[in-house]
Image (cartoon, rainbow, N blue to C red; front, side):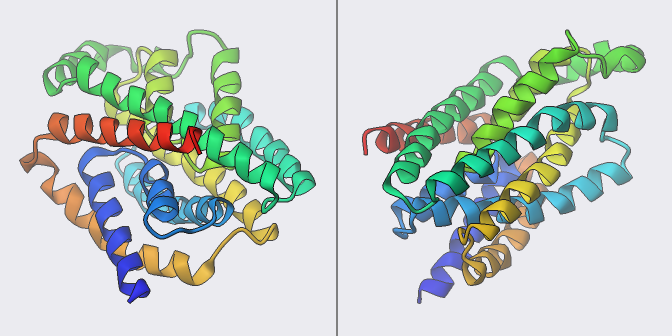
Length: 267
């Protein structure tokens, strides 16, 4: 019975990711902790590899359409990958199943969900379809300058923050990553921002997820069940995206994420 529930949960999260682009980690990890009673370190470790596999397909699709700015991906990875390795070292020292590590994970996850809720709401308010179209038209002629950040250090520093968040919580590479990219690369067209966000998340979540696997923090049968549901869910969501009220869904999601964040902080 639990197996079918995990497949259905994977399908539901995949559907929402396909409809809204909100990161799977910000949805799947709270679902595993609150609804299925999975230990936080197992939920986070399993979800990291779940995210790596699901976003790999998106990266291949974006790369074929030439929507991935690889220079931007490299700049973010220069900060996020070393930070992920340092965070994994800290977890190894603490012991991922220790009470101290569990407290750090749940508290950090709570704050990460609040940040994701704020980033999701920000995108609803500031980036309507009309504004996206206007921004794309304005930016179309300046793509050669688009991959230059406001300052060279910003993608490395903010990438390090996201890398740390993702390793401790599995949250941060989705809505937070897109918001960071919008602020650091103001001339980058929105489709290429999404391409960069999906592409840099693959090596980051893969490194963090495999690191968690070496710590015994990945439930492999659970991962297989989640992927069995999520892949068709993402496929369906990406085809229904033009028929759904995206702003309503994103607004509801931001409230749900904020509730989960406060609940985790108060545990």
